Image 1 (cartoon, rainbow, N blue to C red):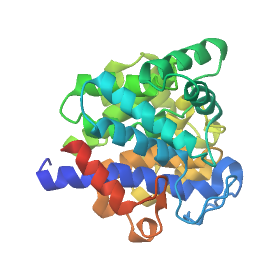
Image 2: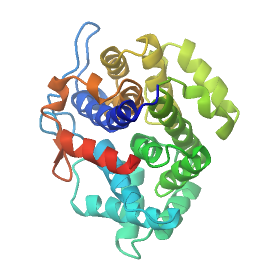
Image 3: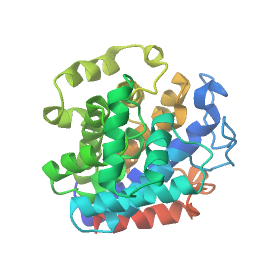
Image 4: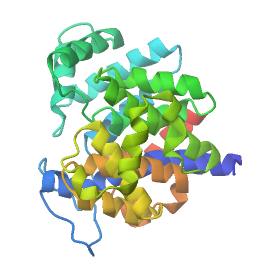
Length: 307
């Protein structure tokens, strides 16, 4: 169903689902705590970086930077400059949690021209010299791209790849972003769960990757800092829980390892599917993080993106 109200609810849900999944996964990141089979995840804070209860991590902070940059308008190149600028604003604030690859790229750019082109150049250089550069640091923040390009499938895929490429030049990382962004776009515009909808936009190997997620043991996808494994955990958890918002996020977190990111990625799609109205208030009430925002601010930002 695509009424204006339903579409706006699902668009807001994409950002709120991302942030809630992030905050729920924080306490369990890198197996700091283990979530039992009958235990419900709680946004109680802590984790390796010592976040406050309900505080989101770098996943949501960088997604906010993407959203704010894209909302600035202009050409894609101008928007990429704006996103890059917001990434650096966040980096300058000395975040408690930042991925190794993202830190390497942003630290290099911080000392020189603070532009999208400079950032992409450093990301490309990093990928050339590091054989494992397909981390999930771009995937975790890709949801706002879908909201900014809801009615243009080709432009959405192009932007997803370009925004990912600001820090992650590896084609696997970018394909993961294109696939997940298209799934969110379809969820918001049509209310459908269709992760395979973007298979024609990425390499053929993703058919096998999604099939493994649908049938394999989720425990085999640990560790899951690789973008491919993150997609498999998020998609697999959603399938095994029948698309239920709360059960899917719990299933993703139970896999362990990079729990804030796997839950954020799953939450972005589930929020886009079910809408903001389905997100529990007990998750939303304590939600907060850089740059001093709360749940209502994320909702406003999502609506700015969809226009």
